[in-house]
Image (cartoon, rainbow over all chains, first blue to last red; front, side):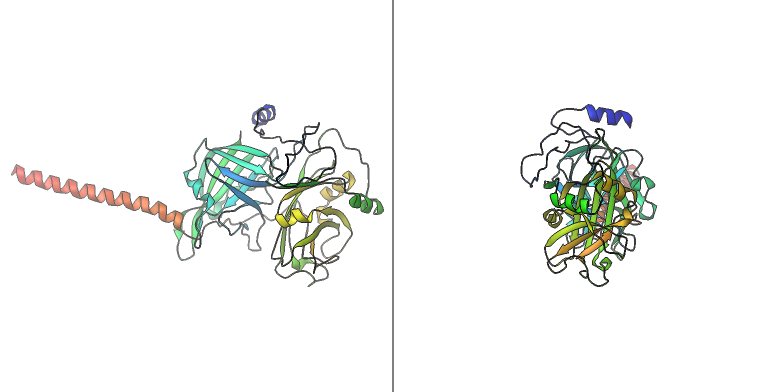
Length: 193
Length: 205
C-alpha cells in the first residue's frame, strides 16, 4: 500500500497520479464550469471530494450522484440506470485509505440494461477512470471480481481506514421474477494505479 | 466536468467576526488531515415542525480540514423551486441557529462540487462536534429561518444493509440464454452419438 502511494506521488505526465491532485489556488477566485482548468498553486496539497463520473475500460462515462441510506437500510442508488451512486459514508477521491463504494443498476424493468451491466465482463487488469468533483482523474485497475449473497456484503465494502480500494457494485446471480430482485451482488474490486 | 470555487467571502468573514468565531487566520504549511462529514436530511427536519417542503430531501458530503479548506457536494430532490441559498448553521437537531458558512446555490442546484475557505477555528469546531451544525437549503417560498430541507452534519452516516441494483432480470436472461444454448447443444450431440452407435451396431450384425 505504501509502495503504491509512493509510486502514485512520483508519477508524472498528463495523468493525475493516484494519491495526489492539482492543488487549490492561493488567491480568491470563482471558477465556472467549462472554464479553464484551475491554476496550479505553489503548495502540493491533495484535495478530497466525492467522485463525479466513472468510465469503465473502453466505455463512455457515467455520472455519479450522492447516495445515502433509506430508512429501511437500502442504499439510495439513483433510479436512472444511466447514473451511479456513491455511498456518502465511503472514502472520497483523494483519500489515501479506505474503500470508495460506487453502485449502479445492472438493469431495470422499465429501461433495460444499466451502465453496470458491463461489470460482469470485467476482469483483472481492466482499467477504470474516476473523475472527481474538482475535475481530477483517478485511475484504477481491476484486481478481483466476486459474487456474494446480498445479505453477506463484505465488511471491506464499508471500510474507510484500511487499504485504498475502489469497489463497483451491482446485482447478479439468479433473478427472482416474483420479487423482481436478484439474489446476489457482484463486486468489482480495483486498486489505484 | 463542472466545479465551483468561492474563496474569501467577505460576508462569511463578517458573520464569523460578529459571532466571535474567528481564530487564527494563518494557514499551516503542512496539510491537515481531511475529514469527511455528511448530511442526509429532509423537509421534515425543519424547525419549526411543518415549515419545510413536504417530500424534499437533501444529501450532502463535506470534506474539510483544520486549515479551513471545505469542499462540498449537495443534492436536493423533491423541491418545487430553484434553490436560492444554502448555509451551514450552528445548532443541534431541533434548534435554529446562526449562519456560519454560506454555500453556492448554483452549485447546489446543479449538484456540482464546490469549495469555500472557512476560519480554521470554525473548521475544527465542526470536525470535533459535527452534530452541533446543520445544513439548511432555501428557496423563495422557504426562506430562513426555515427552509426547503435540513439535516445535521455527521461523521457516522448510516451503513447500507442492502444494495439493490436490478429489477428487470434482463441481465440474468442474457446469462440463462447462454446456458440454454449450451444445454441444447449437448442434447443434440448425445442424440447424434446415440444414433451413430445404433447405426454401427446394425451394420455390425
